[in-house]
Image (cartoon, rainbow, N blue to C red):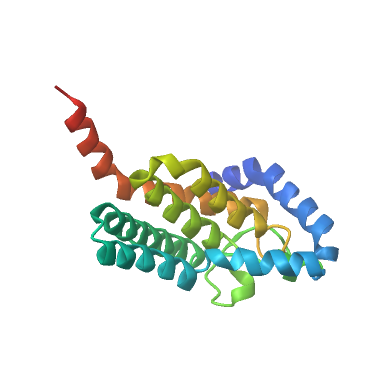
Length: 199
């Protein structure tokens, strides 16, 4: 098992090197006014904001008598909670200094661990996971807005890099978790649509 872990770490080294170079490039600018504005925008992907969005969608559907909107809100919330639980499990077993805290020589690579400190919980990006899970679940009910929803989720994840909250690999891992959560929640809907389309 140790050999397998070392092999994985060695294979991922080019990605971690990209992470380091990205941090070194962006860290000197992470407190500029523009980046502070991006940080505020990126908070749309935090858990309370996403839960409020999901609950608001479901409530609006109830008030309008719109079953599709209620389903979308419920599906979004379920996908978000699955993604949040999954990223929490990963964060609980991986230590990684956030880019804003590792520029003074701390190791930028993820390590096995479980430190509860926020500054050591960079991997994976929870904002990226939650945003993509919610967007994917929304798109299942409203496919005509799929592109816009995924673009918004992508922007929320992307913003985490210049703000030095996360490395690019943290964001990629978060998107992976969010995408899987959305697929899991959307699977019954896709199956039902396939059955309805069969003669």
